[in-house]
Image 1: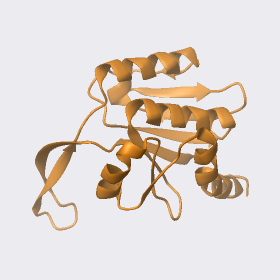
Image 2: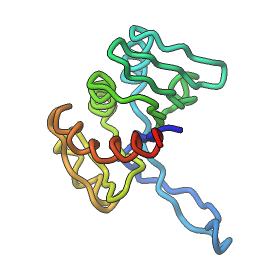
Image 3: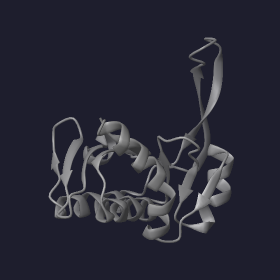
Length: 166
């Protein structure tokens, strides 16, 4: 069981793909999201290696931080050096360094943070991304620091930990 945090591109390429609506089967146009720059992806991969992540052949990584933060990172595009438009962190144990890392990846990549929690809204770390995030995700806000991000995610982490520890 984990508290899931998704990091998602909030930049569109201007292109669309046709996909069937999963409920109606009708074709719909879906915007193509811009991937993170290859150099940015390399910086993020290096940072995760510095932290001791162990990556498997499918692009999932296990992360254990010194202050107790623990997560599985599902990022096959990132780890397999393909164009990366999203990644997921399945957080099993939260810590200040885990929130710092989520903030760092989001800020470096220019991705929005979307947590699986009630009353969730997209969170961006750069004010310049706010209007784009609102266009894509609806509700969005800016977190200027990791401490602000911790505050925004605190209720979700707390609810997860209470449920997990029952």
